[in-house]
Length: 435
Ligand code: DLL
Image (cartoon, rainbow, N blue to C red):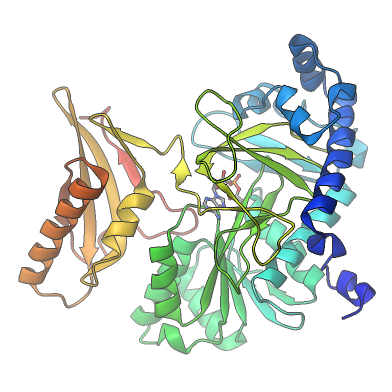
């Protein structure tokens, strides 16, 4: 394919740059971003001045470590538009992420930002195995959430037909997938499971759909869940990563040929991993993922603390760009049970090993006296006998104890009794205040 044909469908040559060329581009863009943020956003100017750093102090990529961090709290303080770095007449789109409490976090995009976003989604889709001319069923929520509209722009940019279904209305999803015959679907992994269940409930075989690829993200999921989705729907499931504060979906994406964790599109974002003392750690060491945007005009972020836990790994299918390992969880989702740290993804991994158990489970945290207790409520698969269910419950409890190191209660609950995902799934219910 010629270079011009590539850029026509949104595959930018920068995606293919080697590591040294990417790093050179990163430095140039980091210097631009730092100056842009310093000159146009009061928050960054104040923070830099307090820390005694000036934009011209960034001479190498390592110098990013001299710069102050940005947190979600900082963004909320400047609600709604105080972190924007361009006048409002240059802003073409506003999104917001709700969060569980308080004010939403508001983000903005110029026309260039929207173009870059569409290019990066197109690039992500191409890496996922999607090709121009395909139909793509988009079941990420439309609206203030970046998932729906973000994906939408990139699907069109790649030269595909978008089916803008949004989330919810699961029976209608089944009908449209059956009638419109899309080649690919975009939704959260937990919602794809809801859709698979709905196919079965309608007496249809989820393996018989036209879908070849699912581009899943917006919540943590494990390789065990990938396997489950691929088996149940007979497709390839690839991981798309992103967050509104940094752009939205498409900050990184897995390549379908390797399925080994999202490549971060490093020509647009500079990732770092930090330890608990907020010091940068070498690649291959787990910690908190932090991003500096490199091309964002309306809403640059400098050293934004995502709270997502992962590690940076060398690039494979796109050697110039590093990968992240699948996100273990957010450090806010970490459950500390009697001194032992654990994440819902660890339970997912263990539960899905048992063919008698379904992937529908929730975690309930309660308190009896001074002791916290965790109960895993899980639905067995349809048609499994009582004795087998009892056996599976005991085995799950045993494996959690031996691999995570803490005792939990496991309770089998009737099929269909647990809440089903409509988008981002809530696994953990903290009932301690009421206990
Ligand atoms: O969830 C953007 C997005 C939409 C990504 C659609 C992928 C697909 P927020 O609502 O701001 O944005 O939530 C961002 O979701 O910090 C992670 O904790 C989590 N997250 C997103 N993608 C993944 C993923 C969108 N692939 C937060 N794996 C992030 C694990 C993910 N967690």
